[in-house]
Length: 207
Image (tube, helix red, strand yellow):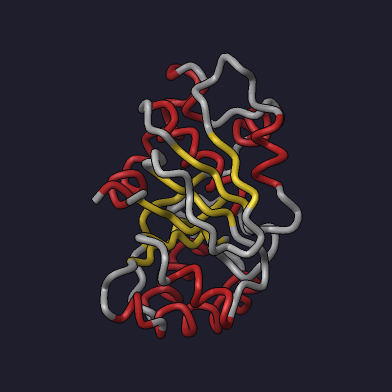
């Protein structure tokens, strides 16, 4: 059975596609048979994949707007990029089928307000309560030394959700995405600082 990761946040522009494509790039770089599923009607992840050069480590695309289809039998890892506004039955259907839910969030009051109800609903899901599906958060476009980062940590502490790491605001993500690449496809010397920030996230995903 494939190991599966859902990237979800109810707010648009939170960084879901950035996370999804870079996680797919990481697993592909390890030689893993990875499937990038796009549950979002905008199909941002699959548009990224369409730009991916043939010389890059292969990632298989999967358009699955119902979110319920099974991946091909030889798939080892599935990453699901979800739409904004994910809630209710659709959220429940996805959560119960995945091993990890990774929530990207930016340290602004607007993002925290928008995510409050989502966290309440997500953590109430049976799969999460029974610890069959695990939830983690990653701070997007943030310096962990700032006051806004501390405020975000305090907000998340009320839900007892682990903050796995912080990804800084850098044009590397934009430049890589435009070429259908992830940070894990770029020269190590160019992305060392950012790859270091990813390590606790990748460790959590692999546990």
